[in-house]
Amino acid sequence: MEFIELKDCSKIYKNGVTGLANASLSISKGEFVFIIGHTASGKSTLIKLLYREEKPTTGSVCVGGIDVTKLRNSKIYKLRRKIGIVFQDFKLLPKLTVYENVAYPLASYGYKTSEIRPLVLSALEQVGLKDKTRSFPHQLSGGEQQRVCIARAIVNKPRLLICDEPTGNLDPETSKEIMDVISDINKNLGTTVVMATHDKEIVNRMKKRVVVVKEGLIDKDTQKGSYK
Image 1 (cartoon, rainbow, N blue to C red):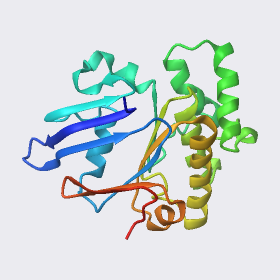
Image 2 (cartoon, helix red, strand yellow):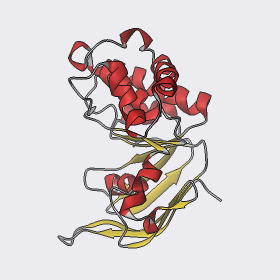
Image 3 (cartoon, rainbow, N blue to C red):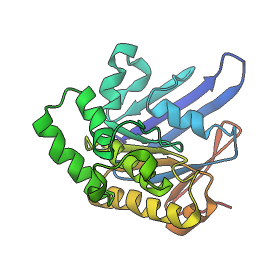
């Protein structure tokens, strides 16, 4: 059984716009997959289906053995605990330190203080920010802020890391550094990575599996693909 399985998924929004049309996609545990396509191609819809931000109009979505389509709203938190999500716009809490930002999801999940500290320090070490625990977001560069977001996303050791345009606000050199961090997480922790991006240079440099979404359809699916 595949780790992620979309079968005949369509998403039609209330305004009549089709986000996805009959899309099927399988992703194995530990894979690194880029989802690419032009604006409004459907790639963001596909990403949102994975963490139940959206529900398909028809078809099914399974993630790590959970049928996301049938998941009650009151149970979505169980899915989210297994998934780390990194956004383009950081979404850090400005009045909390780096340590507190990374610890926040664990505290909300009910972890004990004694359990939280080693997990937070391990995640910050993974992204190269163990010396920034007491810093606040405004004291960090854009790249450092995104590293904090990645640490927060992996702090509970999720099996899936979803990245939605994680380098969209960063310069090319910082983008490369961020991608190296995410690549290491994929290799060293065995975390499945699904990333939506517009960044041609990153996709072409990394030579990972590339899924092209076009007008709501999965247009191409290529191992060691490129962004043409």
